[in-house]
Image (cartoon, rainbow, N blue to C red; front, side):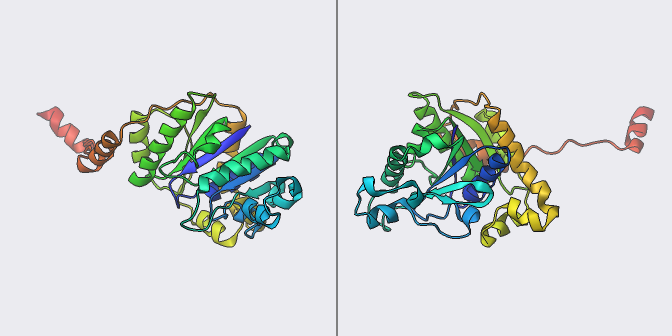
Length: 289
């Protein structure tokens, strides 16, 4: 099974991806996580350091693919999750999406894809260009990480459009949304009324999720020394169980950008007033009248 995780920059894709990877490993699956971001920090909470990238390795081998071995690019992370970082070109030069394609090409030549039960792509991409949409060409499911904010849902809508486009050529499905560190879900619910799609999980505003990124540890590793965090791990285990059940998923019908602006803006500009509830005394007065 191949998964592609997308979402607005800074929304917590990598933290979410790493914890889902560990959750899948806890369910007995052999997992490979591929970081598809020039920052090459997708797998940081799994390994605790920035592992060498595919580009670093290819440069060291003078781009002789035949001289690259799996152990040169695949690193062992927490919970038995294997990790790869695609890397990227220097800032302002080259195309990061091209590097993603080269990463997939190299891993196929190494027969790495045949060794795993689940391969998870953690992908950079708000407004998804052709290069960073490349993992959708290989994925069975796309997962979108969002919060309850306008910008994240705007990005989610563009990603949904990419899923719809890629689903024309192969059986890709959107497994659903994952709300990350959000105290409310009213805007998410407003969006999925317009663009129907499953919501896999909504994680509340838990500070330890943010802290885990700084510490370079997954929530599962942190829970080993702090059992009070076990309940947070249950959120990720729930997501893993839903994915392993191979949900039907959807091919989403994204809404046009202007319609989305109008929909979400109207939610704030014209809020629905809460229903007035009568007290017992008021009801008694009404009955007497």
